[in-house]
Image (cartoon, rainbow, N blue to C red; front, side, top):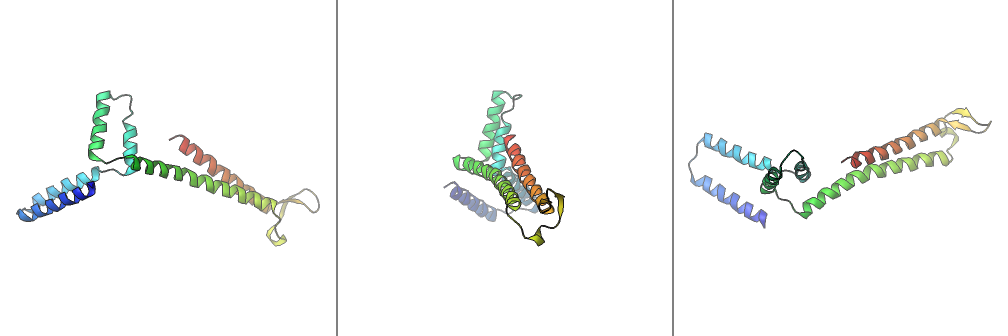
Length: 161
């Protein structure tokens, strides 16, 4: 409904501009005003971040209310917008964690499952004549540690926000 009224007003503006004789200086001024108004519209995540900046201890309550009023006046927000930002935030946290768990699982599977002799490469440290720590085990441990690093890094990244 709101989009329809914006379209109607834009069409009215186009009709009014076609009726009036304007010079290039006026056109540039109108274009600058229009571009500035469009630029004031924030994306969903920027809008939520803008609301978070209102919670500044240095601002008085009246200044906070004025800031909230100007944000709401220039931008549209409802629960759908807030939910979509929360879902995006959750997905951004979930994907690296899942990738980390897949890497840890893959690394342990490479260690536990037997590999063919041509894939074992060479043995770095022998436990016995027939068994030892191979280059494949080392690569598997690097994969496991990388997965743990990705999980921990993503956890601390989103815990601090």
